Amino acid sequence: MVDTNCFIGPYPFRTVPHPDPDVLVRVMDREGIRVAWVGHLPSAFHRDPSAGNMELHAALSSHAGRLGPVPTIRPDWPRWEHALRQAADEGAVAVRAYPPQWQLGPLDERMRELALACGERRLPLVLTVRFEDLRQRHALDSAGDLSAAAVRWIARGGENIRLVVAAAGRDMIEEVHWGLTPDEQRRVFWDISWIWGPPEDHLAKLFRSIGPNRFVYGTHWPLRLSQTPRANLDLLPEDLGAVQLADPGRLWD
Amino acid sequence: MSERNIEGPLIDCHAHFLHAFCGRSDWQAVNAARFRAGERIGITCHVASILGSYGFTSPTYFPSPADVTRGNDAMLELSAQAGDRVRMMVTVNPNYTTHALAEIDRCLARGGTRTVGVKLLASRRADDPLLDPICTVAAARTLPVLHHIWQHRLREWPSQEISDGADLARLAARHPRTTFILAHIGGGGDYLHTFHAVKESPNIFPDLSGSGVDRGMLDAAIRQLGAQRLLWGTDLTMETGLAKLRALEVTGLLSDDGIRDIRWRNAARIFPPHAFNS
Image (cartoon, rainbow over all chains, first blue to last red; front, side, top):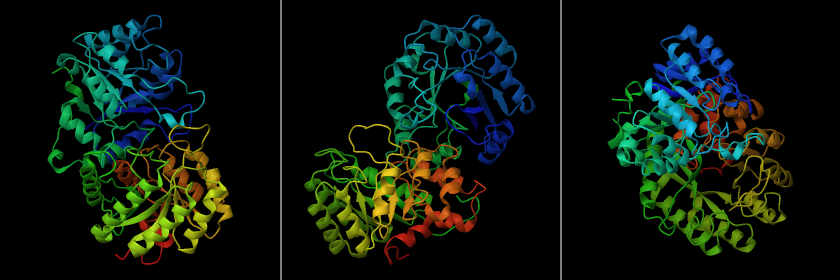
């Protein structure tokens, strides 16, 4: 199992308990997670993500093989192409970007350029719909959620693009999926960290309508309980008990 | 499913069922899914309510008296059919005091020991005097009152008249003999505010339900309020309920007895005697 959606580092708007690599590895052992794609949580809120990326690489260096770095690349920042090249050279397993936090609108061409550049290097681009529930946000946390329109726009940018969209709910997933052509749909993967289970059974409905191969495992740790996605899979109806999620290592296959 | 092998009862203090008059053709499938997941989780009793027509013929949190009655009727029927697996809370809209009081006694008369509490909708601020007669009757009948709560209200939100922990604490202070269940600390808003707001209100028992599964939420609840003040529940998302159940075992803050308190023993203490036969 690969956790495609987790972070290390503190969150600016509330305390999250021990968001450290050593603790993450212990959590992964407990949850049966072999590998995690790890972002640097504070970088989402920094203007320049460069320092955060260095911090991420240093923090994960002693856990190579378990924790894969997912640096942040900001496509409206000078020399972002150089930062992407450097990230790839240093072993990034994916790249994260946060358009709402950077006030990049849903049709921003620079996000497409980043997604295409990532795709050329076979690096998935991880987008985060939300960090916290809308109803509890700090007054200064005014960026808003990533929109379905933004995901559709990026996904339509080119055939080599691969997106992993984290922390989306059923409505957004359906809005994006059925708003894309079959070719475009294959470029988008969804983590299951924030999809409702029973009794509404959103996850089961999505598996039946869209297919489990469009979904990847994700916990949203350290912001959310790591037990949630496993619990959701454990509560699927009998006929979906043996579903296979997509392999994050083979998103271009 | 239990890492610490803590077996035994598990009471879901905050559940809902649908019915034929809520405008959804899939209502039976949703109810069946709750039972299916409940069996998988190990829930021994769903303490449930039906919220009028869930918006179909009047708003979920501002239901008409007719819809309240129809929903309670459906809940009476379901709890009668389900045996010990289901107990019911009587839903009331406090804006209709006479109707609300009559519904409590009607559902007690028809449901007997299967009627175990009162579900107060977010139709009126929690500290409003209109809630007083309902709370007085609930205490006289030894029924706990489950109050829908928004964790820290900073403004008005549409479709409900929200109350937070501080509002409920004022009501609880006026009714020290009434037991209150503070709904879903994971159900939206800032739960950290709630723990401070109700810390000195010993007759308020927050339930852990809701879709929110923030790390640190359970730890803060246990540290601030203690295991004997918390109730386990699911509300609209049972996977988050299961996740919290599993997380309780690894917080490092709870003894096995503390976990049992949250799983069922606190519920057994605050609901009427003989509410849970098994």
